[in-house]
Length: 591
Image (cartoon, rainbow, N blue to C red):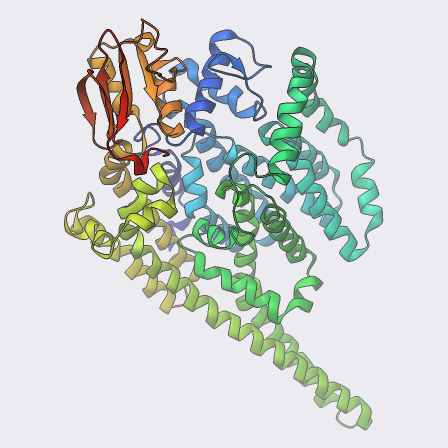
């Protein structure tokens, strides 16, 4: 493809994948509105040291996201500016990833890993989230690729860059960045017994850059807040999050197996490439220092968080870049390039064999064994080559399932994927093709890039085939923003509820909530600009005139005003005296 290097094409794709629709959906879940409120509080108060949630100190996360969001909030406090830090981090990292990969592995490998990473569900999804997960992944992964290059080339500028980005990762999500980087580096050094490099990495002036950048906030926050900061941030939300289930996110040890596959969508079938290489060619894998580093990078993140008591899907987001680079290396070197290289070796071995045929029998036997080894390696490379073609084709076809995924997308964001799948049925899966938000003709447009991609794959144009799948993912984003986002906004966000309250001219100090899901309570508190109190009939302040409750709750003698069908909420106008509450359907009272 002549236009594959056109910068306008990549700018258009980057905008579509990472920036389009940032404000199409209101804040989702409990975290987005909380993080956005902390950033809003920093902007309004001018205190950029102590994070505050609705005015009270809150030490769940470090400040990097809050600082950036507060900066963008000067342009307006809204969802777009709250999600801009993540979108910019995702986009800039893909550019950074391509630049370094191009220098180390060649243009085709760099383009392939960037295409794979930039079109994954995980990278696109968290680029649209008002959270610190993308900032953490971009800074940590940027630091680790620089660390790898330092290990391979021993050029000091990469070590300095590593410590700078590691400091930013520590400001994005805490000391876990240092722990992960240390474990990966230690595993690599132990494998090759490169103790001198480990010594030079630790005892280097570059380390001072880490402390200069990362330490001041921790010191200032401790000086202002004392042991409360240590107990809440270090002990509870770092050590406790790993060793205890008190924070409420327990999952089985295998939890991240499907999460990694889902995060790589539509390239999930490509996971078979590194798995196959690890199982069948482990010796060759560990003989390559670059692939060994990538293996420890992805495996350490996966194993470390699999052993954690609390698990969330975002924890393994930093594993996506090394996995896509590993896959790209297998495709470009482990198969096509390597098979050509091995073929040349085989030819040389054959020539040497002919030239020494008159030699001793022992020498001839050794040459024959060498030729057999080379032939075996060529056979393995050819097998991986064929496997890659089939897996890329499977990934392209898998993209066609995206309209089916939209059938549960809104519910999964609102209540979780497990609940959404449990409440779905066979007919519901086909809703997008019949009467769902995605018109059938729009869904069928995906056949164009997928079809052309399969054609390019048939012609062995691997990079072009993957690019066409990327185009298909961008087209899917257009469809989601255009057709699916309104439904997601109605079901998964309370923004429409707050907008309705504004039209009714209901002030925040007149409003209370009653037994709402925390996604809804934090969302409403952000949009009303006030931590809404929990309402009790026996102890209701006189200023409270309205209550938002679940649609199956009944407040005696109160007047029902508005039913929010998507959120399953109802607004009640309170009488002068509250008498009793009863639940019409108690099975959902604990939601």
